[in-house]
Amino acid sequence: MNRQTLLANWHRLPHPFRWAGVAIAGGTCVLIGLVLLVLPGPGIPLLVVGLVILATEFAWAESLLQRVKRHGASFASVVSQRIGWKRKDKR
Image 1: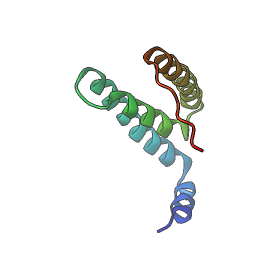
Image 2 (image 1 turned 45 degrees about the horizontal axis):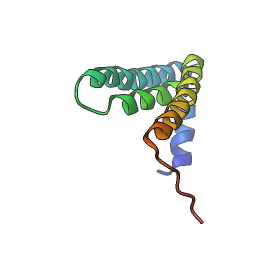
Image 3 (image 1 turned 90 degrees about the horizontal axis):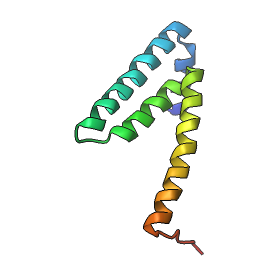
Image 4 (image 1 turned 45 degrees about the vertical axis):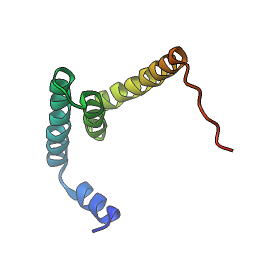
């Protein structure tokens, strides 16, 4: 099965089934990500993956994901300036 077939089959599902599947998968990723913030593991990336999944069906998750992206980019630039990393230009 290719990607287009999978997407077509996904969109043929009734909305409540899609909604429940996204809520379960995204919610599980977010909950595991929260647990992994305290335990050793990739907590923050798993939180972002959970938000990406949830943003496919929920508007609140999409706005939260945009906020996380905006703050993540500014945080990364502040950290790179303080550490002194310079971006290498590819020529």
